[in-house]
Length: 190
Image (cartoon, rainbow, N blue to C red; front, side):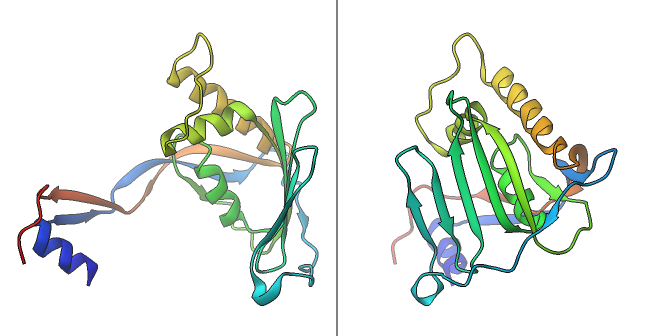
């Protein structure tokens, strides 16, 4: 219904492209995967299963999602990184989280089923780099450009995953992309 309205009022014309795109694939690193299966979800969740969160004075935050799985974030003492712990994460969840921190989409190529407990140390600079394209007013690192900041962020994320026995490989994979062929700025009168 919305698409039809946009097509009529704005002369919107789009097409779908499923061509190969650069991605990172999560795979097992040499030496094997070092993940632990997550325990059953915590049963004490909020009313009607909503997500609950609380913040501590030390800057740490703990949330419990609607399924009863815990997420905890705590800044490092020197403020250079954030320690993230997730219980009940699938490899697909990890790929989604990493996609927002890196310069390209991340896909799961581990073929691991189930839910795992994950712990990652994410440099604050990576979080700032991820926030900039989303409109957050994050300062750029002094004496560097966006490309250098992105490259250093990717390297640190690669090292953080190595502790879990995982690595990111550069690949090409088919990804759906919506391409706008035409769109008028001014809507037609109805």
